[in-house]
Structures are given as structure tokens and as C-alpha cells.
Length: 256
Image 1 (cartoon, rainbow, N blue to C red):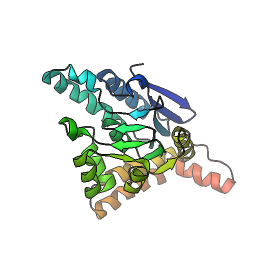
Image 2: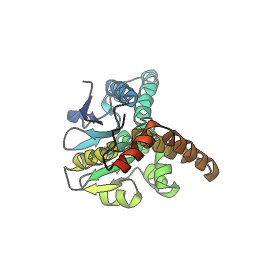
Image 3: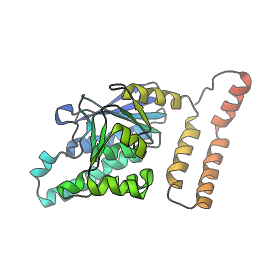
Image 4: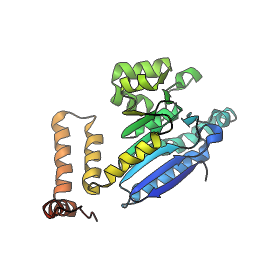
């Protein structure tokens, strides 16, 4: 359905970029659908972890659909902009932990989708890059800012200014991948991680994600206040009472 589908397994939702015939290139319709899907998944309290994966064998996502864009006027490209921002913002704004399962090409917007996740699992075929400057553009799905925060200024500048591609080993050394797995197993590994996350307190996990995301760009004192708020959110929730009771009863917790 418009290049994006959702699958559920218990408390884990899998958002799949499903336009393999176009290497999962992001069209306007696909972006609109992705924003809608992220809003639905984010609002679903029964979802405790999210995997962002992609169909096909060659690519995670090669970025914007430049064939579509080649036919567009400046006015149409400008009108497309908020649709694209909503798609990237939808992934970035998910309150649940997001694990990107990357295989093949993750270029431009595909790399930005990966950067929008909390963890990146890449298989041996993964190739990352932000090549926008080579076609007269600036990364526009958060790439400049997310790369800066994840990689640091030097490595972010290398990635953005040169537009070069990073194989999986270099991506790992840069911090652009968190785990490297055998070809064809990134999705499986990401789902395993998501399953482990889903076993934990959803209140605590969401609060921890919020503190980590908001704390990345502020001073230490302010960041510790954010952590304090997260701690209080969890400590005075039913999850804390259930978690401690389950520990003492030597049973698995039953999160609401």
C-alpha cells in the first residue's frame, strides 16, 4: 500500500519500506503513507518496540525518487517538502525505541531513515552515504544534524561534504552502524533486539528514550534534570510497582 506496510508480532511493530522495484526510493505517496503509519504506530500503547526494515535484496532505501522529482516544477518540489519532512519526522518522533535493519544501499534519505533510529543493525551488504551535494542538494531528512550528533563534526563533515559511500566496516568504525551481521540477517537481528526491549517496562523504556533524545543537545545539568524527570515518570507508575513485585515473587512482570 503506497510502498509501506506494517507487520505485528506481539508488542513489536515492523514498518517495512516496500517498493523494491524502485530500490525503495521515497515517492510523495510513499512519504505520505509513512508519516501516517508512524503516527498510528506511535499512538498505539501496545507497541513497545519498532523495527524499520525494507523489502527486496538490493536496497534499504536509496533516498528520494529522483525520477519523480525530475518531472516536478520548483513549486511542486516546494509543495512536496512538508510531506517529506513529515515522513522523516514520523520515524524520528516515534516514542518507542526504533531499530533500523539495513541491507544493501542506504543512501540519502535511506541513510537518514537509519540515522533517525535509535539503533542501526547492518548486514554485510550495507552501504551508507549522504550523496545529496552531488546532485545540487543538501541532506533534507535530518542528515546534517543527525550525522553531527551521532558521528561528531569531523566524520559528519566527511560524510556530507564528500558524498562518498561507506561500506559496512567503515560505517561501524564511524558509529553509523551499531551491529554488523551476516548478509540477509539484519531484519532477524533487529527483531530479536526489539523482542528483548518489548519484555521491559514500556513506561520506563519510553521515558528513557525521551530523556536520551532530549538530553543530547543540552548541558549536563539540564540533561540530568531530564533524567530525573524520566526517573520520576517510571518510579511513580504502575510499572515500577509491578516490576518490583514480580522480582520479589520470582515471576515475569505483567506490564499493563
